[in-house]
Amino acid sequence: MPREDEFLDDIETSEAELEAEELAEEEALELEKEVDELEALRAERDDFRDKFMRALADAENSRKRADKQRREAEQYGGSKLARDMLPVYDNLQRAMDAVSDEQREAMGAMLEGLELTLRELKNTFKKHGIEVIAPAVGDKFDPNEHEAMFEAPVPGTKAGEIIQVSAVGFMLHDRLLRPAQVGVSSMTA
Image (cartoon, one colour):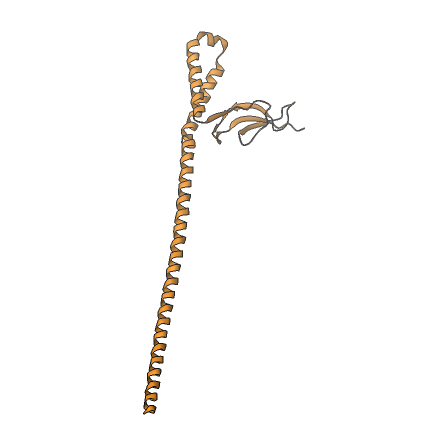
């Protein structure tokens, strides 16, 4: 009988080994499945993190862009109205420049009103960041601030010097509203 027991022990051992192998394979498959799930979750987490960081950066860029647009609207929003007011300034200034001493005595109160109106317009311009560009005869022509209306050879001047100012120009903060209109010397050395 010892032989039969040994045989049965071998069968039981084989079955136990086979069962252990199957169990190990199942555990390995389950572990592999869990590792795959974990990797998928990590990839999904990384994808969400990337999307979150991009959305955060996009929101920050949008905030900065909106802030810049708001500042520009505050500074330059009235540029169309300001441009439309420049002829009013020009006409008031021309009226004041055209008055003779005799007329000044005869129409003192009216001229004083014109002067006050022109001064108030200048103060309003200044308050809103509008500066007058008033070049003088002899200044160097600057194409960023001046518009050459004509060129003429004038003795005693250098090429590129302003020889006449037809109209003053205006800046709104750092932007040109209207260039000063000038005549420029074309005298060659």
